[in-house]
Image (cartoon, rainbow over all chains, first blue to last red; front, top):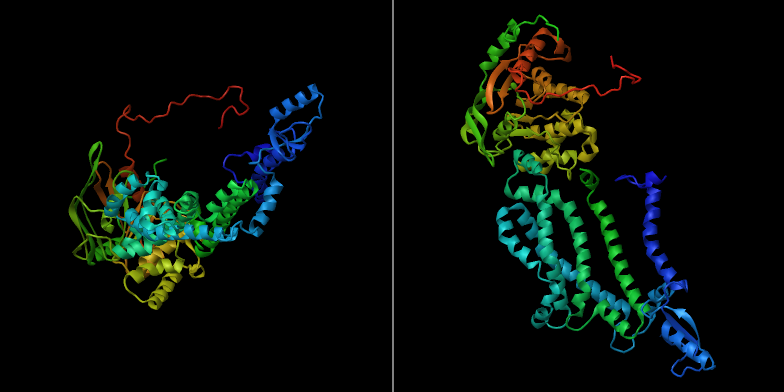
Length: 320
Length: 304
C-alpha cells in the first residue's frame, strides 16, 4: 500500500486521484479550522466578555493576551473585580464559517454609499478588464509569436527587444498609462496588456519552435510551400499547445489585475477589497479573494473541457 | 557458420539475366551525378558523401544499404530536395532537383502523419496542395486508402493506428501525388519483425501494381535482398558507392526464397562488404574483458 502510493512517476488509480484532489483543498481548510476553533492553538488575543474593574476594557474588545493577563493580576492584587474574556484570533483572521457566510452576504449587502457598486458589479468590471487586456494582447501577441517561431527574420526582428522589455515591471507603467489613457478602464487594460503581451510573444514563439520539423519536411515533399506550410502545418500543428499556453497566460493576466485596478480610480474587485479592509470586514476580504480563485479555476476547467471537444486528436499528441 | 556451398552472387539464371537486360533498356528515372556533400562541424570538415554516381530505371526497386554513418539518410534527403549537395547534381527525368516537390514522394522512418488530420485528410493533403478540388481529392484519397487496406480507418486519427498502419497511410499519402519516384528512409525500422515482414509483402504488391520507381534505404540485409532489383552498397567515412549488386533472386519474390542459394549468396556478399572480417588484432578496442563472476557453488554452475 505505502510503496504503491509513493511509486515514482506512476499514476494512482482514478479513485485515489479524486481523494487526493479533494484532500488538497481540505488540508488548508483543516489547518485554518484548527487555528480558528481550537482555543489553545495560537489565539494571541482575548475578547473581553466582562470588563470587570479595568477602566479601559469594554465588552467585545480584542486585547493582547499579555496585557489581559497583567490586568487580571493587578485586579487580583488590588482585590477588585477581575475581567473575563475568551481566547480569540486577531481580526484579520476570521474563522471559516464567518468567511463562508460572507461569501453569501457580500453579494446581498447593499453598498454603504449610494454611488458605490454592489459586489457582483465590481466583479463584472474586473472580468471585463481582464478580458479586454487579454484579448487585445492575444490579437497581437499570438500572430507575432507564431511568425517569430516560424521565420528567423521575425525572431531576430522582435525577440531581442521583447526579451528586454519583459523585464520591465508592468506596474511601473501605471503613471504613464494614466497620463496617456485617463483614469478609467483604459489604463487598467493597458497594464494587463503590458503584463501579458511580451511574455505571450516569447511563449508562443517557443511553442512554435517545438513543432516536429519532420512534419514540415513531410509536408514539403507533398508539395506544400510557404504560406500553405504556415497555415496548413505550423498553425494546426501547434494549436493544441498554443491553447494550453493561452490558458496559463490567462492565469498570469489575473495576477496583474489587482495592481492594474489600483491605477487611476480604484475599481472592480480591488476597490471592493480595499474598501472592506478599511471597514475591517476581513471576512469580506477573504470572500472576495476566494471568489477570484473560484472564477479563475472555473474558467480554466471550462476551457480545458472545451479544448478536448475542439481538438479530438489531442489525446494522441499529448502522449507523443 | 558451417561452410555452405553457395553459388556466386554474380551468377544469374537465364530468366533473371534476361529481366535485367530488359530493365536496363527502360528509360532512366533518377540520375545521380558526382554527388558530393560536406558538413562543417566543430571538429572540422566531414565528408558525408563522396562522388556518388548511379541511376535507377523506370519502375525499378533499388535498395541502398550501408553501415551507420555512411550517409544513407543524407543521400535520400538530397534526393528529396530537403538538403542541397555541396557539388554534383540529381536529375529526375532529366530535370535537375533543387527543392522538395510532389514528384518525389517520401516515407520517413518516424511517423510523420499529421496528428490533427484524419487518415483521409492526411492522404488528401498532397492532392489539395496540387490544387485538386475537395471532392476530387476525397475520391482519390479513398481509393489510395483502399489500396493499402485501411478503408475502415479513413476517419480515424493517426494516434488510433498501430505503427504498421501508420506507415501504410504514409505510403498512401506519398503515392496519392503519383510521384515519379518513392523515396523510403528506413520506413519499417521501428516495426517489430512480424509487422515488418508483412509490410515488405504489402510494399511489393503496391510496387507491382503502380507506376512508380522505389528507392528504399535500410540497414537490414534480408530486407534489402528480399525487396530490391538492385542493391546499392555504401561505404562509411567517406560515404562512397562500394558496389551495385544485381540481386539474382527471381521476381516475383516470396518469403520461401529467403533460404534459396541465390538469396543466401547475395546476403553473404552484403555481409562481407558491410561487416568486413577484422583485419588486425589489437586495433579493435571494443573487446569485452570477460571474467567469470559466478560463484563456483552457484546452483546453476554452467549455463550449458
